[in-house]
Length: 344
Image (cartoon, rainbow, N blue to C red; front, side):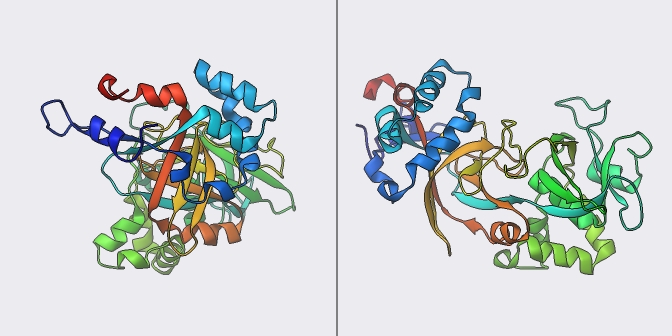
């Protein structure tokens, strides 16, 4: 097998010796994956089969059909896949996300004054729509029947949009779930980076909880801070998803705690198995499945790890800002097709 940096060097240079734009590719062995032999491959295989049936490429479809026949999980991955490291020159960044549980109401009563909107009928995919500030400052979407539910806290609404899904506890003791329904076509901007730019915090001090506290302690400035992120997410009710299942991801299937990652689909086909080696205070070496996306997830070495539902998952996810690397497991012929003919 082609190992080490051969694939990256070959794809990273033009014949004339000049650097070329675009990603580089390194083919690895499974022995190169730190902790591979110790992972629970059977669990990873189950998660893979949850969504692989939605992958349209015939090569993926064939592997999916075989995967559902319950083969030896580790042997399945090692026999039919090739580990491929894809890089675009940016350092690896792992973050975490979760499914929040929030207090809310289906009607605008009492403290519940902040609406969760469904996708407006005049929204056109690919075209910029009203910004966050325009929607919130002028109540531009009110009185159009778009309200799915109402929350008691505007910061909760903002972070619900960041996470893309959530569970809502209703005053009568019941509940509902909401999932991603679309967005306004505006670029995502990091509120944490804005606080660093302003000199309010150092980069290492910023976390989701720090942002929450600052906005709540500074309501007027906090409202304007949230408007820096012009991106705005719309939702749909998905209460049909069983309570024991995770929220729906970008593949419209339930995602799995500690086994699902969100990726940039420009570099990773949704449904792909991905080996991650996350560094930091709580290292993770694990086979995940790329089943989700996110507005802030851009680049070949960028991933969001799904930590589950509720406050504990939120605290854990909010602490993650770590380096490492992630390696795609691609069908062997697909992996080798990425290499120039001169080294195949």
